[in-house]
Image (cartoon, rainbow, N blue to C red):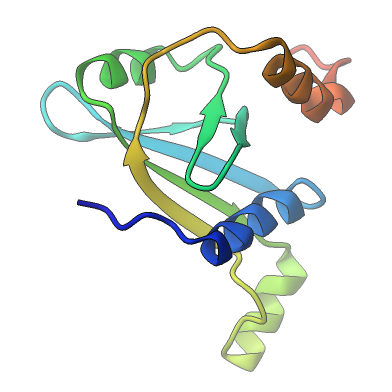
Length: 134
């Protein structure tokens, strides 16, 4: 059974997510395919909530939807690092802060977003509204 995340650990996770939106942030959600193999899905709509909770908006993640309906286990990986930060870490042999996190958990039941969650998501992606993939 996974260990619950502490408030201090959650603050580190939130910092990686927050800092990533100022630079380059990549999310990937790993689920379990029907044959037991992994499916890794890049996803750009992950929002964090209270400690240990997050939500995503599915638009293109059809395989992920099927996997979670069958087996709700997930692993989320988020990384946020600039080229300068990577070079600095390589030169010094250490990083001044975590540049990524990996979270293991269980997806809850699929549901509609609340109006507040939808508004929060739309605020997050507002800068991309003129792009075709928005």
